[in-house]
Length: 193
Length: 193
DNA sequence: CCAAAGTCGTGACACAGGTCACGGGACGGT
DNA sequence: ACCGTCCCGTGACCTGTGTCACGACTTTGG
Image (tube, rainbow over all chains, first blue to last red; front, side, top):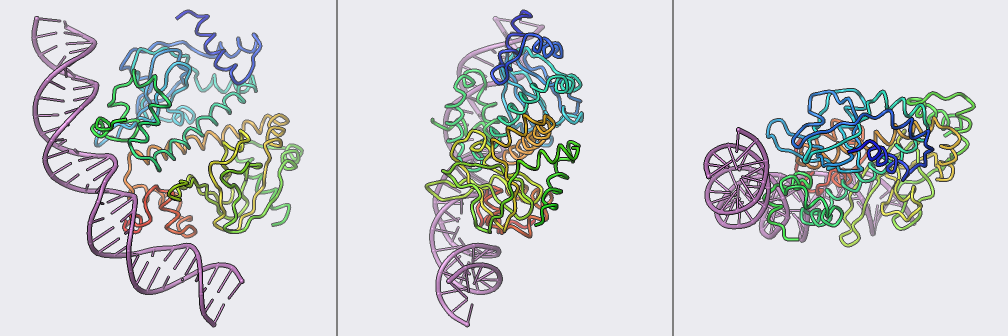
């Protein structure tokens, strides 16, 4: 992907929430590092430090918790173009990851170290506003997910997912979808919409 | 509760994350309104607008979703002294509440209207930083709750709750606790720790 | 001080979903 | 072209949890 494309995706993403001058965006942009990852590659691995926060330019990732005894995976989030994804707690507290983040497709990302993140916030208060909006949206999405897990059956959750993320249906295998919805692969397979 | 106590609780709460000068805190404090609520009173009611965000000085509240057909309640959060609680989405978007917030005990709160919230953020960037930290903590707590719902049995979730919130066990009836854990009152009653 | 409402345990039964096992098909790497 | 790996459906069975019903105790409010 060419340089001007990467920049423009990030800029458009930020400017959905806060307008930026050219100089301000130049300041933002220089804190990020571009990286590529291959399918099956781990961008974050349990037990390892998490040096970056990731803004995805293309591809698809999953954020996953793996039960160490049973090896059973629970997927906290999928992420794709124009999304942020991370074991944010480990990143933000500079501790070892308890989650893993794995590429389901070849993925390009703009990466932001915690030091750069803090420099960005300190140097440009607007960006703090931007992240407050982002995290708030994530918090509210989490609340909806909690409610959905508490009140809805597997079939209802499946329907909700299909309605809200139809494009992902084509890209993620049912096994992964089951791990996201919190049901076994077999039960998901038996659900007719 | 006396005026200086109310102020000092709020100030201590904020200063756990960001230090404030006396003038800065005076600016913060004047945007809040003090209000009292009685047990069983609704601070937020489904279908109504949500004029305030609430910082609790004393008492105990629950944030609850009620299924309209079955009347079954699911509790998203308990809140007590030193906590914020609200149907934040309705508050922030100035829409009607989909959740309700009800007092389980007589409760005192400092209330912040959305206009005052925005004035506060605009007038004192530090406060934006404070709320970013708060919302981030809430987001991460939500992630942990999602994982807990996906991976743990009712009994394990009960144990986790007891371990993390022992004080609440004395104050909230089992019925409410069941609605928080996402199990029926009867199953909770059958669980031996 | 009494009535109404809330709290809590427990038994009987139903059912959604988990687990285990199998087979067949698609795909990727060598 | 082949082999291993993943993907997906399906049957049989098991189990955790929901639902309904009942009774006893405690708290609350007028």
